[in-house]
Image (cartoon, rainbow, N blue to C red; front, side):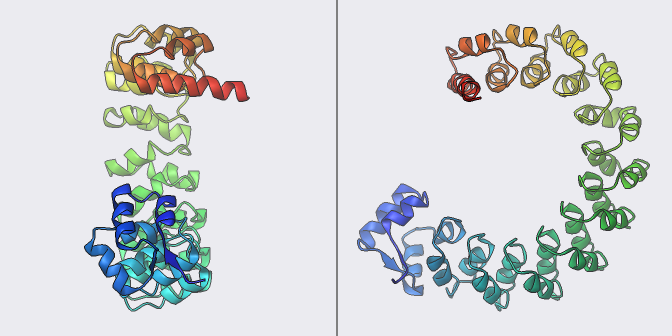
Length: 345
């Protein structure tokens, strides 16, 4: 059967209704995927990229779009996770760099094709291979020696990267690379501890957000005023330090502590006496906040506080029943869904 784009398909792909209407008027019986029809669709304001990008688009249609004379359409197909392997291999040899870059970033691309693309002269293509979680460790290791800092920067952001390569990148000469090593959840704790001595404030800032950063390092970072607010959002920070910073003179730090699920209940109870709406909002969103405190927060005028309560799995059922009568739609829906999910379990 010939691959055709139809009104039914466009609706299935959630294409904007106005575009579906225009399409049906122009092609009441559907349209074959030809360059002439694609050009006409663009003239009519129909966004073909939406079809090429959608993972629900049938593979027959994607195969046809992959042969379009428009490199932008081919590049979009190259990024689609539903594009057939055979088509991805063909597109990996495309004359347009943006198409090859799309293939390089697609996790469905075969390892052999990624190996070939990793040797491209164009750094923009190697960059996508470095970010691709499906790229083999052998290829990633080779890319870690790339002279272009952008490649190493992309590698450091890849959460499938091995601890060995991350440890190596932790000593990179570029601060930009080290920043992402500090943020990567796979980075060895020894490397994270070493990065805790870094002079670059952004490296330390990203280190403070990493849930795997050793507690000793986090404690040291929390002593620095410029970093304390951020470090206090890290659930790996010790309960003792969180309890201490619940009394911090900086309201921003107390706000971070109020939203941290690792904060001791006693400290959260003390923070509930605060009048600041942002602190009270964070308490409402915190799943560790004592139920008696959550029950009292539903009368807050600040609607984000009530919204947080409505979706918090720790909020008592009686409070959720009251929130179903709230004047704000989001709050009512959140409370209804929260109660419904409890009945199922």
